[in-house]
Amino acid sequence: MTAEVDLTAAGAGHALLDRLMAFDHRLFEAVATRHWPGADPLLPRLSRSANHGVLWFGAAAALAATRSPRARRAAVRGIASLALASATINTVGKRSVRRPRPRLDAVPVMRQLKRQPITTSFPSGHSASAAAFATGVALESRPLGAVVAPVAAAVALSRIYTGAHFPSDVLAGAAFGVGSAFVARALVPTRDQLPPPGRPRADVPALQDGEGLVLVVNTSAGTADRMRAIADALPLAEVVECEPEYLRAELEKAAARAEVLGVCGGDGSINAAATVALRHGLPLAVLPGGTLNHFSKDLGVEDVRGLSRALTEGDAVRVDVGRYAAGDQEGYFLNNCSLGVYAELVRERDHWSKRIGGWPAGVVATLRVVRAGRHPLRTDFDGKERPLWLLFAGNGTYHRMGPIPARRYDLADGLLDVRVVHGGRFPAVRLLAAAVAGPLTRSPVHAALRVGGLRVQGVEPGTLLAFDGEVRPVEGDVTIQKLPEALTVYRPSGPR
Image 1 (cartoon, rainbow, N blue to C red):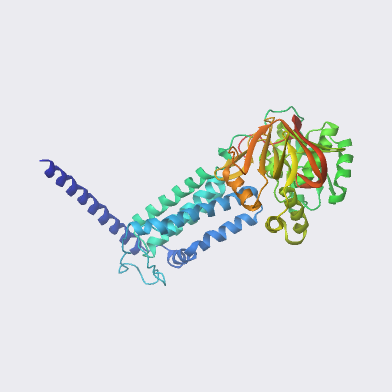
Image 2 (spheres, rainbow, N blue to C red):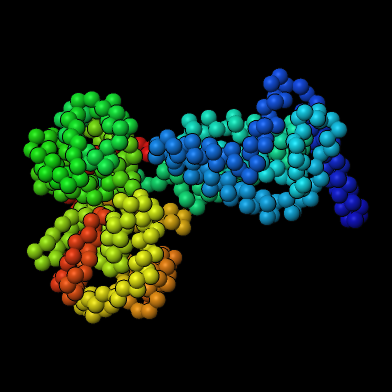
């Protein structure tokens, strides 16, 4: 009796599969034989343009060229989702189900691809890539996703129209592509999944059209497009452009007449403005204009539209400020302060950035610093003499976004995020091990702790200290501490 039931169930399953396959073939023939005005010259070309992801790489380049931070993130997420989908489809999907391609008898010759695919039919790699890219873009920006989605749907349809795939191949590929985009989001969350940065809220004046704001723009950041955007969004703001060497002087002048002090530039420029704002007791408005823009990104200010919204609505938060002191020197930092190889890297990067640009300079600087094999620092740390390759103190706790340690969720947590890489042989291996190990692990090469302040004694003369991209020589005792909620900064509320 049991065997008969099993055979009956198996037979019913085969019958259902046969009916689905038959419906799949009929649907393929209906699409392949139907004449759609304008589709014959368009869809085959569109299908060919998506070979090897060329269409989507071009779309990503177009999004990146807009210089919109959201569009650039959408482009990166779209390509990352596509890469994940493509790699998995080609290594697992097509090897698991070896389905032959459709017969082309019902497909008009003018629609057929000039070069017929030789891989198995299930699932459709083109459809997976199209769906992955479109979904990845949409997860970062729904309006951009709405623009890309019809193109992705047309690519998927073209695979049936040209006879390259059955409809079920396309549906399975598209589902796989959507899933890949969500897997990528699970590894690296989108902005709307992240906790809001910067608490608590602060009472600040609401500035309609920027009236009362004096915005000092570093000319290295003040491109023509950015200046037009500032003029359109903040027509009543006073805008002062200056060369980098005159930035601090212009900030001091601006603070004397401003209701709100503003700055447009990179992390170094924002650090200078924060120092002036602290001295004069003014709220600060920041507009990113550098290569990295760590503080503005963690704050949630991406562009002039976001800043304009925060100014108009009077949205601001109080954030912590880091402070270092070494002998008669002292200064503030918003991002991080460090001793050791990172300071060397910053100096090398600044040296090369004027010649080859920011990101290439960072790569060259890293290679040069690691290759140079600097001797570790000899310091007294926590009452013990220790050799250190790196001491990093972040203003607030850095968290990982998936595998990437890159972000601070809370800019007023009252803590320094201290990372220490101990001295010893093979500094490059030690630094890599510390980067992979994660923020809360302790190992022979790496330690991490959260403290309100620390003191490093016996720093040798000529040792470099880096803070927010700036570099200074220090010696003797170095004290690093937090000033909780010391600075008021405008930031837009709501989703970023």
